[in-house]
Image (cartoon, rainbow, N blue to C red):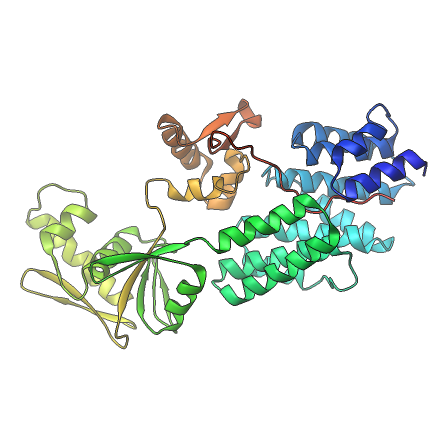
Length: 406
């Protein structure tokens, strides 16, 4: 490999895409195309990056399977950074097998990490954890170790394990400092900032306060009866009852939980849950039916008793009852939560992450765009959605470690 290609690869490995482009910007040979693609990805030009990487993969001959596999992994990384979750997982898996067969442990580990990150974004935690178990990060370079620890921290956050997440981020920070890549350090610092921010609100006995992740973990371990509006479930220390597919029952449980230790009037329940201004006898009959269903679902955890004016929720074993709500609650909050990572998302990617239909996501985005809460660029399949930038601040792409080429 010539000296310019080597110098450009080293520049990319140190997080200097402009330095790499100065060396290979005018070259059209396959290694230069691959390096230009990675450099463009680090600069945020995702579409150009993917086009260059595809050209490089086609230009490498059939005997250069290792180089082609590296291009496939690099393209998958760019697709993930641009939140295109529909890329071919089978092609990435085949590239990983090729890399392992040729002894390229660093890029094979990157392929594992990309698959795990994809699963993490769509909420398949068990599968992501299983993939990471295949990777031994000990012999890998610092940048790969940082990526490994960031993934472990992401899984721990979603599983409400604050101590595990903090420990993983501390290890990621040490590895990122050893790697000396500014973008990687910035990604770790951003993760630290997110972990230090409120993740929920605690509503109990008529008051509310923000909670950090460790506060939520402590709440779940305290034995309290929790109506979890973040996951649409009801739980105590040992049992979780999901109501994610039964919104009426969860709405009733939340209203009863917020009123505890008092009861809630029947007409109040009818008007707020069924969204009716006036309640007649048919609506009260429907309320009794729904309450009977809720009573049956919650029987292991709590009792629901009828009072003179309404209904009362009474936990069986827990001494305290609390409602856990999202930090900010508004319509289409889940869509806004996905867009809050600063990246641009396609409608199909949001649908995969939210496990909803594309039409449902489109309606939500159109509603949010009408109020100026989100904005889009591009047309058709190239259309992407993101939160409006904060005036005076630039949004930077935080890619994981670049793909080394040797």
